[in-house]
Image (cartoon, helix red, strand yellow):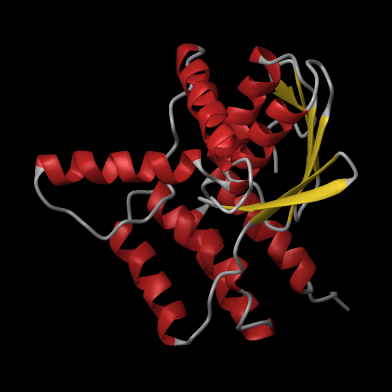
Length: 219
């Protein structure tokens, strides 16, 4: 008798669909997952990001509006780093840390060096509702990039860079799955700053070293 796949198996398959752009299969998997756990926002967000990557902005926005109407909110992403016997936590766009000014100065420098190394912000998965003039679209793109730059793991890395000696590995924990842009950016950061950066996200450990990741770009 065939064994029916459980939520863990189907959730892993949906993650694979997101990584490989299998949109139709992802839609079918979400239908089954919603029946198992209708309040799990991660599944909805994964499919919404897949719609955005495929250029289906209306579907991406529609799915997020459904979540909002149901009163379901995405868990906020948090990244923590342990330095000097203390745990420092960051959320996206966080400016509550006592060393915020130093962190954002480091962030500006890091983004500048990333761009020089060939980094291009991956804003495809971010959903903004506007579709106005060329100037409006340019402003929207800039807003998307600024939002990416201040993701929690990037802020945690910047704090680690200003708080430790050169060459010291950085260990970061994140409660959600690391996004594609951060994954690509951190690979480059590990190379240009000669740092080993280990991030434990919701799915697995990522060990970034000398421009590559232990997950072989599968996460």
